[in-house]
Image 1: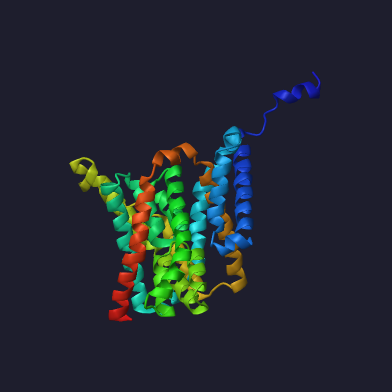
Image 2: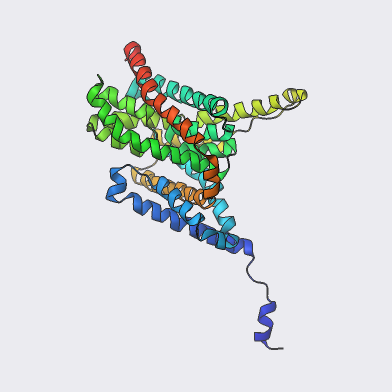
Length: 356
């Protein structure tokens, strides 16, 4: 028998290997598209981040050509959606430093804690009790509204174990109301009795995405923008403790919902270690151990990893599942947006009056 005739009987590359690499190439290509589009004039004008664009492109691909190549890319896509997400959240810690707390004082710190706690609690209560949404969707929308938008939704997904379409719905609410905030807040500044510093704290403590906070701040002044970003970064810093608390809450709730003996079982708390490493990354950044050039490289890598995770999430999101979610998630997000603007202004005013 000739060598040519024997070739078909030789083992080919395992499907799992090709699916792993091809999936990474696919999510990487979509992520690159999102990053490049985010650098365009119109995206910068409206504060649309690379993460948002990556998930939009991913959804478009997921509902067109992806099903036909899913068998050859699925493993790499899911690797991006899970492993690369956690790596991206860890590196996200290099965006902030502990010193930023001191820049805004105890008043800004208290405002951040109150806004996160009250917004998330309101999301869960309204979502499950009033709008009859499932707890996962309510928590994901609450995380995005209360902390740092799409990044918080993605970080909360492994903790609440939300399905892809629920995460996409939550991210969509961040895009809609965060974009609306960029135009509304500068208009409010013209009517509300706020200094540039107070406006910055107000915007940073209530607007969803970092890019949206920058846009709303710069529409007033550079001083307002700087204050807004610092306040926003403080909310971002609270992402890790928030995830730890949420993990413990879900563990206790799961036990109490089971049999009576479940409460007495020695079930260890499910610690999201990527959240702990997020704090470690923030600490390293705070100590200025690494050169600024290295930190910049890390931040670029972080954007790439999170964009790939977003792209993978979009690929796994089907339009039918989003349509099935209906108007209720949007109604919940609308309620939270009203609270962030009206309630947020009241909380900012009260705290600044006593501690400012």
